[in-house]
Image (spheres, rainbow, N blue to C red):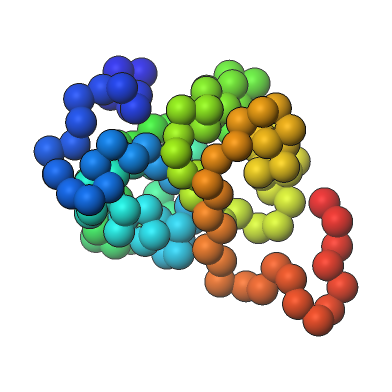
Length: 139
């Protein structure tokens, strides 16, 4: 895990966010784009992808993941969850934009992490409304 550790050699980019550790669980455009902008300002960003996943055409994938370290994790496995929790523990910021309740089912949502005494800045950019005038269904 040397390549994908927050303690590994800092990014060659020096910027106003140098020294900030960001864990990117984002999908499609909103999450990865938010993390890309933080990486462009010097943040140390680790992008978590599931095994065999290439969710966007290769040019867009390369663009949205520039200046990031990539880590393949199976979040449905016990080992993958344990490694994700370890990374969350060391992150200053966590970005995720799964469908509602996905992170909750894996035990990696904000409430579950905070209940374990790990409070982080959590960013949830999304395309579809997850709250509003209609009924909000619990997880």
